[in-house]
Length: 195
Image 1 (tube, rainbow, N blue to C red):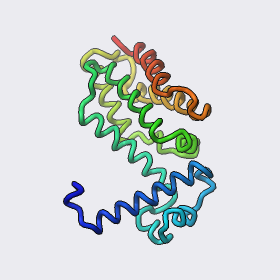
Image 2 (cartoon, rainbow, N blue to C red):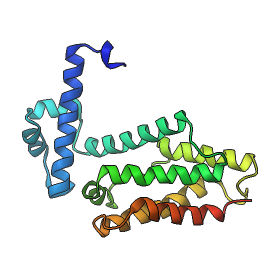
Image 3 (tube, helix red, strand yellow):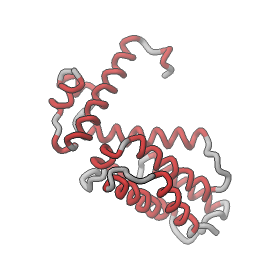
Image 4 (cartoon, rainbow, N blue to C red):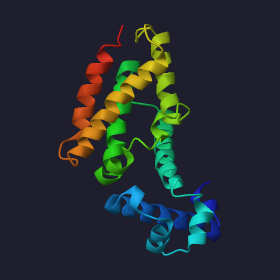
C-alpha cells in the first residue's frame, strides 16, 4: 500500500511496530537475544506489553521479522532484475547483495542470529532460498550450470559457504570487508558449477 493511501492510524501502527522492532534489535545487539524479555523491549520502545503482543506474538517473532525483511529484500532484488547477464554471474551478484544485506544488518545483530537454535536459516520455503533455486534451475536449463547436482543441493552448498563467511566476519567483529571476501569465495565456488 502506498504511503499516501494510508490513514493516519495505519501510519501510526507501522511506526509503532517499527519502534518495537528497532528497540528489540538494539537490545539484542547489546544484551543478546536470550537475555532480553518482552518487558525490556516494550519499555525501550515506550509501549505497553499489550502493544508488543498486538504486533508480535512472541519474542521469536522479532527474529522472524529479520528473516522476513531479508526475504522481502531478495524478492525485490530479483523482481527488479539483476544487472549481470549469465546465470552464474547473477548467482555471484545475488551473494554480493547477501553480503551487503548482512553488513547493513550490522555485525552485532548478525552475531546474535548465528545461533544453532535459530532455525529460520534452513526453512526451505523461504523466498530467498526458492529464488536462488529457481535461478540455478534456469542456469541448468540454459546449460550455463552443470546438471550433475540437484538445484536444492547447490543452494545448500552456496549458503553453507555464504553463511560461513558471514559467521567468520561476525567472529572478527566485522573487521574485514565482507563484500570482497564474499565475492571472491562465491565466485570460486560458482566456477565449479559452470558448464
